Amino acid sequence: RAVRRERRVQLGRSRRAIMGFCGKYREGKKASDSGKQLSWFHDCMEQDCGLSLNDQIGCRYRDADGFCYATADAQKWCLDNKLSSYCQNDGGDTWGWASAKMGTASGAVTGWTPAKDVSLFDESGAETSKFSCACLKNCACEFGWNLGKSKCRCVEGQDEKVVGDQTTLMPRILSAKSSDKAGKCGCVCDHKYGSVA
Image 1 (cartoon, one colour):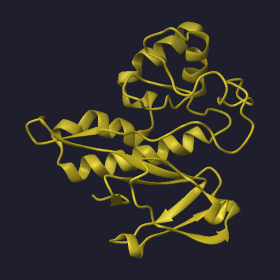
Image 2 (tube, rainbow, N blue to C red):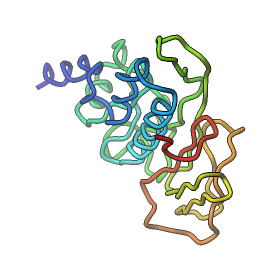
Image 3 (cartoon, rainbow, N blue to C red):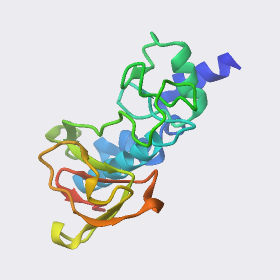
């Protein structure tokens, strides 16, 4: 079983080891237009953010590209093999979920933060610019065509704090608390609102 776990982590270059949109971005970023790259990466950040809030898996360990390992087996293998080059520890020893035996965290918020200084590529595979992301944890956002047409509902209502790029303008948070948004995330990347392609 330990060998199978190691193999899954070592196969982290495949889509199956990470969340679906993260795999799409990693495999297609240099062969796709910037709109698709941003769309995939935005959805990837929302998936990884949500995974970090899952108290049975979490995202204490990431791959070399900074994407969450999407299975409990891979997370456990990294916990047992902390010095492996396949395992990037995001958050130290404390915030990993106690329920998954990954750390001591027992609350609804973990130490995960979205990516910053991510490269955008042109059709030739050359880097053209960089962007960063910001997210609201335990929130769900409805994105319109601009900031004024977008809104978020959060477990903590307007008390929810933005994680990630603090220069990013986020949609307005409705004042009513929405307990059904637990485990969800609303993210903005490159100041774009929601999926763009």
